[in-house]
Image 1 (cartoon, rainbow, N blue to C red):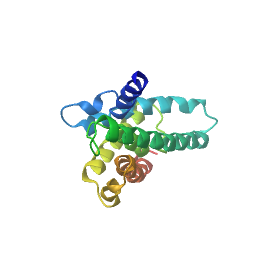
Image 2: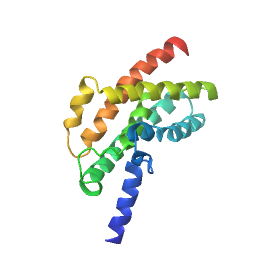
Image 3: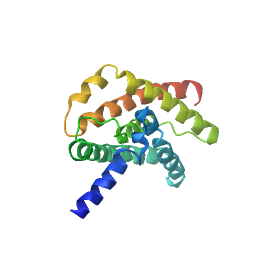
Length: 171
């Protein structure tokens, strides 16, 4: 029983991005901020790869892995920890959506990294809040998938928008 409670504590910490999702207002917005240190680490790791294509492949594998971990965590949070559908405190999906929005951007330097993160944050939050088109419909899936899929789709659409903006103005 103690091991199960210990696992629930870890799952809750991951699901709420170590408490960011438990903010009394705008938990999704604060939860999205949890993606910033992860993106900075991923950006730092880029220098250890042979070239940008290999790094982008690594980033894609990271996103897919993070997607499945997020579904697992969201499912346990929904069913066993918060005991309600799509709890607001679960923000691991916002982190995934933010990181997905930044896929393929590869900023170089502090200024470019800050601009990329700022644009990604704004674009992703707008799409996550408005839930246009297929984003809204994707929430109907069960077992943690619906919790994560809407943010992942918002990240994919946001990525398309950000890649266009980045290519037009910063590349």
